[in-house]
Image (cartoon, rainbow, N blue to C red):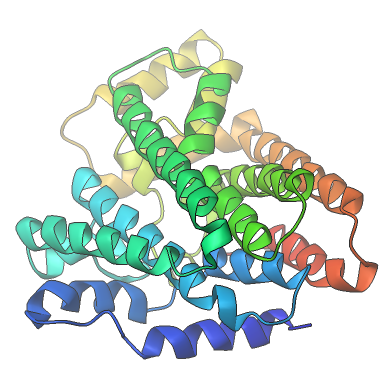
Length: 324
């Protein structure tokens, strides 16, 4: 059995090898830049934790886990271009540090590199592993498309939003757990249960991101606070505010959404005051807890020892105390 800290160090050491580096180095340097700052490494961690529920020889799944992390960073790289984001994990995004063309091409190279890593598994699992990951990768693209379409709509519902973030964010966490369990030889019903667990965990994670974008600390969160408000993103916080607001409050919200020339800090402060008054924060806490509880319930049903469940249980609990 490996502790979370031990797994995190194993992932770091494997990434530090930079085995994917080739010429021209300028193509791969932005990938190194994205990966070297670390992030939370949630996806490879979940892959290794799921594998370690059933087996201890985690070196057999390590390269696949790294591939999932590279794929995740590829999606972030392209996402930052589409959002024209300035910061990622407290540093300049790739398209701001280099340019948009570099970000697109290096992102493409990262996606191909990810698949080359993910296919490192025993032949008996390869077909299912690739089929499963293709499903996850396509779902991520669908989620991103919904996200872009929602920017142009004024009637996005909470259910639609939850479905969008499930595709865009949660399925990759779900797929990471399923991938690790599949490669460990887990029964089909167990790796499917872990997929469901990851889906619930991923929803909690993204909803926490929505909350932290408003109430987080930029030094811990790694992104500018209020960025979603400035960009008029249809987050859970904004959707819930419109659901709870009376007519005059909705008018104020629309005023800030439609205003083209504004002071960013003033807009963030004004919208945050509305969230405070409507109790949006409390609704966010409740729905985050709902999905964390779902993931715990699924974990308890797995037919593995309590000792082996302990680290995944701790991981879920730590998600409930995020500040970044």
